Amino acid sequence: MSLLKRAEQALTAHFEKAAGVGAPPRLVAAMRHAVFSGGARIRPQLCMAVAAACGDNAPNLTDASAVSLELMHCASLVHDDMPAFDNADWRRGRPSVHKAFSEPLALLAGDGLIVMAYRVMLQTGTPHAERLVALMNNLTDGVGLPDGIVAGQAWECETSADLGQYQRAKTGALFVSATRAGALSCGHAPEPWTPLGAFLGEAYQVADDIRDVIADAASLGKPVGQDALHARPSSAQTLGLEGAIAYFDQLIEQAAASIPACSHRDMLCLLVQHEAERLVPKALCEGYFKAHALDAKSPIRSAA
Amino acid sequence: MSLLKRAEQALTAHFEKAAGVGAPPRLVAAMRHAVFSGGARIRPQLCMAVAAACGDNAPNLTDASAVSLELMHCASLVHDDMPAFDNADWRRGRPSVHKAFSEPLALLAGDGLIVMAYRVMLQTGTPHAERLVALMNNLTDGVGLPDGIVAGQAWECETSADLGQYQRAKTGALFVSATRAGALSCGHAPEPWTPLGAFLGEAYQVADDIRDVIADAASLGKPVGQDALHARPSSAQTLGLEGAIAYFDQLIEQAAASIPACSHRDMLCLLVQHEAERLVPKALCEGYFKAHALDAKSPIRSAA
Image 1 (cartoon, each protein chain N blue to C red):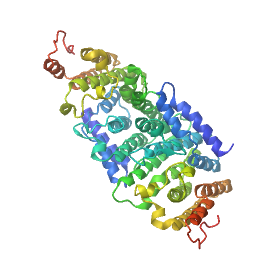
Image 2 (spheres, one colour):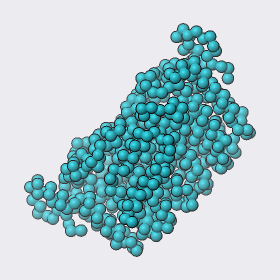
Image 3 (cartoon, rainbow over the protein chains, first blue to last red):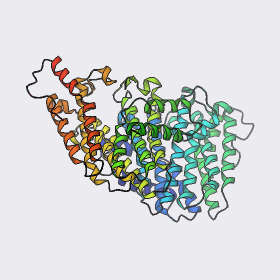
Image 4 (cartoon, chains in turn orange, cyan):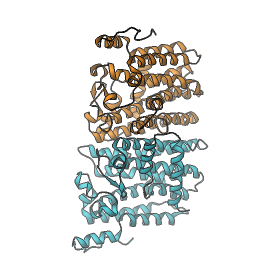
């Protein structure tokens, strides 16, 4: 079974169980809309891939960890899309939750998904109580204060913020949680897997900045040009477009190089390269430079 | 040390530790504004009082449970006050979080407090791993799907809702979590303490409905008349004001009667009676009926 399929199955099973019986139907529908909307499931896949490299000796714990990471990610998207932040009407080519349901339900759906992420962990029971607590701490590191994605988003509300710290928290934190969760699910030390999550997370943020400039809304499934519009820190603004692409390539190389020696190293490298191309397709970059008549003296993307 | 003082001290200590170092300062300030604003701390006090009745043999766990309940309560107030819901500019006599900071920071402060509630539990470590997991499940029951306070709030977004189910979830759920948490912190079975939380929680909701009609904004510290304004289900609307007051008295009596036989029964009964008077002061009811020239044929509040 592919990692993506395993992630989808785990999400479906855990969501149903954690939602329980008798919850307000529109709230459940709003949460479902947020979660089952064609996301790439990269955080769950990363968690599962690292767990496979570590022996995956407690697959139920791996699945729950993968699901809880994705639920946190979805919660952050729901709240980020709201009028108080990005005021984005579209997400993944569909109406965002507050457009499809309402602002109150979007607010509650995000809250409900955060709580559900913990429920998913807790409903694995206590055959591995120590691992479970470590995993929930790791999940909390990725989301809460001082350096999780909630803190990352909050840096946008400060008068000054360090771009690196902002990006590490806003996107990197949950990627770090994902790779570490894969190891922790198996009772392994998480530290060797921290750099993979950190490099990939930063690469994702840089890719997001790049696509906000060069993609069109239809292919991205959400509005573009948001960073300039909201005066948000962006590596495409800071480094220039070519600089940002070069930096992205460098981060992907560092991510692949950081993978510890293990039986699944090749599979993990492939996953990283595959994601790099999915995130910042070479054809998209070349098309953009051509259309904007920029002289591509230097190769736009170094060969992977 | 009084329960209130113990609750305040635990809140301060846990908040600082859980906030960590290096978080965005305005986010931390917004969260602090939400938590340290003169709340009555009734949920933590309830948890601690029940724990005392059960021997309080793991006071660190009791403190963490009490704090996590209050953080969840504060998170719900921050989000409920936002323009998407009550659009309330005031809370406890001070500007609400979105007025004092901003809507984005209020949204993130609520998210941050939910996550912090779990962090507070997790940072107790694993000397009592089984109790810890049971307590986190119990906390999640009070907040999440299908019957927690997030679900309760979401019933306001449905076209039809059962008043009892709505009130049980909106307010009762976290009171039930509070009394159960007191028992669970000591390794005791939580079931005998469920009715106390349930009766008190319903009494609180009814009291809220009553005060929304008879109190003035200055003494309440927030706007009044909100239920009618937002067409929310309210027992004062359904039962009439006198009926709601009689129902409140009945719930308080049932709460006191439900307290299991234990060495601290008298202290718990006193806490319940004290809260009843704080919530719906007899003088306030009498003053209201007098001012509105209602003929108080029947005693407005039965003698406690």
